[in-house]
Length: 366
Picture (spheres, rainbow, N blue to C red):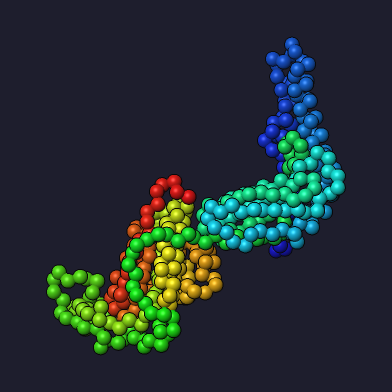
């Protein structure tokens, strides 16, 4: 099946334009037989004005098509910004020398997840068009531009889609918190520290299970092999390699399936706390796994903020990577059961787990 080509332009009326074109119908109203002159003025004058506005746009259509064809090579956007920061959008495309009664706009349609935002830059006859705008939440906002021409009365408009896209990176802001995080070593010391594999049983002590013991310390692997309940003890005595594993969890659930904005608000709080924790552990080698990722990556790389910005809610991945003696920091919303499950699984492996919850946002917070 051949690929469908996009339309070069879309002509459509506004709501006042539709009402103006429908006014001739009032001439057929039986109550207007006694006073025909006002009815004729209203029923014929306004539609004639609407047709005149449409004729202005159609006469300017060839020049507008040529102008729209040169736009894709001259559009730029700020590469990055901050939440709530005022961004300046500028545009100075080549415009036809004579467009009587036609208003021009360069429009950007921004999209990230379930969120949408539009910006309209008015283009004067000469000079740059400037617009100030803000993006109120984190994300990699994909911007799709289009050229818009309207008649002087706003009755009709012609939209010219442009086959390009730009993006703006808005990372989450770090959250202030006073949680105590594990002490690690520098990146070089962590690389040279000996690795304790998962089967290093000599580092773990066990004793028979006594009713009342914490079930999270049960050695379920030993129970699966021999059917004997043993409890892990002395986990604090496990040698620490110095590397910190940072796991952010924000699972998809059925409650928020039909309310994706709430899910993204929880994720934004989780990522803000994740960034704050990574900044606190700045002198330590920190490997982080974000929702939707499959490999642990260092937080000191250049793409760290882009990773935080591009994250979407995703199911919690199986725990892999940290081993006995490693320090694992798990950040998850209080209502997320995936974080609690991964924390219990990590403790069973012999990891030193720190479990953090992001602060609760009030209703109405963007």
